Image (cartoon, rainbow, N blue to C red):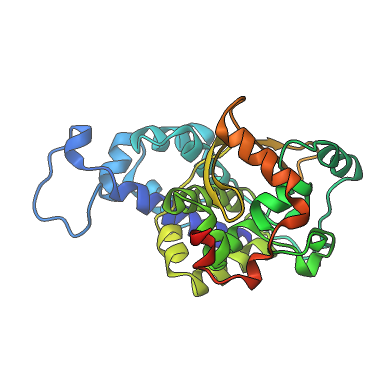
Length: 301
């Protein structure tokens, strides 16, 4: 995933994964003889895209670095890519000259953004960095997603919670999501989009490598190359203090193109979920540290 060569490897993997899901019958091609792999052959995709088989093979193998936008669009149409997948393909196909690596400085949330989410007392809010690490959270955001973490952890780069790492490796976070498989797929698909845009990001590469090694579920999902921009939706949670919650989330990309996002979570007005969220707010002083509670107690209360 790093640098030009890593980006070309990602391009090849992505194209192969999308060729594999298109059957010749689906696009009006007649299949001749046994097929060693599912989906389209390279020459079949080249035919559909209107490019030569040799050119397409060189592109997929990373030997062609000057594909035009029209060629990439033709390949995207032939593969019936979604809008998000098409954007991801364009990111992977862009020529990125090798850069001299510089030590990355820890990211931080802008002071004004931190002040903004602190003032949002009735709405859980987080500020995420490009690697899904928590750069800041307000009181409700902390209590909702990570009450078992130190409230001040985001201010210390070495201790910052990372939502993707927590989702796959932290048992308390796993219990928080009633639809964990759905959440996991969405998380990986969003991280794939980020990886396509920041192909030379060493910290992002390290995070993906760690999760592939430590979580077979992450590794299996990552290998499928899911791609999706996740800017809105619904979280289905079971909080250890207030029970079931359904919250609509919005992910707002902050300016300056640094990959930072502001996430907010709101219940339907007048719903039981709104009441539960208010209960969480007023119960701040009595929240039990879930790190000290037996797992069974979370379900027995």
